[in-house]
Amino acid sequence: MRRFELRGLLRRLADHHVNYVIVGGVGARLQGAPNITDDLDVVPEPTPENLSRLAAALSGPATTKKAVDSTEYVAHPVVEPAEFYEDYMAMYITSAGALDVLIELPGVGPYDALMREARSYELPDHGLTIHVASLEHIIRSKETAGRSKDFLVLPSLYEAATHLAEQGDSYELDGAALRVDGPPAGSDEDR
Image 1 (cartoon, rainbow, N blue to C red):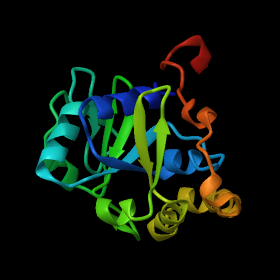
Image 2 (image 1 turned 45 degrees about the vertical axis):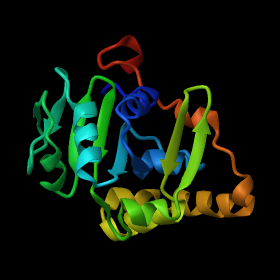
Image 3 (image 1 turned 90 degrees about the horizontal axis):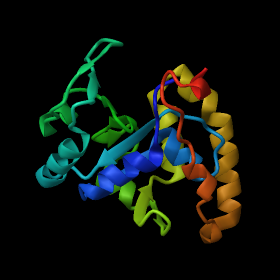
Image 4 (image 1 turned 135 degrees about the vertical axis):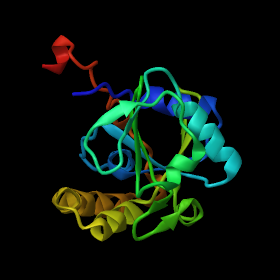
């Protein structure tokens, strides 16, 4: 298992003033789905300035990037904004864990489309505000992607969406959902 520190990744993005919407497994988990994931998926605001800030947030001596058409990650200490457009998803591993960048969420669209229905949460203990794609958008993206791993999680996402709809605007983010940090790779906890 690779190291995954959700709070560390969120802090890194905030420190660089990156505008983004959380999607994927973390987005679903933050809204009550039981999904376990070891990466953070984001759709950034696609302005040149914001993509430059995102590239700076990802850059570092420990950063690796998944090579296109490969399962291998290669050393990649300097991230360039143009990389985010090279493939469906740009996949990185930083010292805080894995972060995947999508310019558009399949079946939904880019940042602006997601923000229209995104839920915003204040995290006062962390000094952060995060924006999470609606569970309906996350479900649509999983249905559209058509991957077997996405179809496997759909029943739990449908159940979470029903529960969320019952709570309406009274839903508050469960702080426990932020504790998806994994142990460092190779540690005793990782075995």
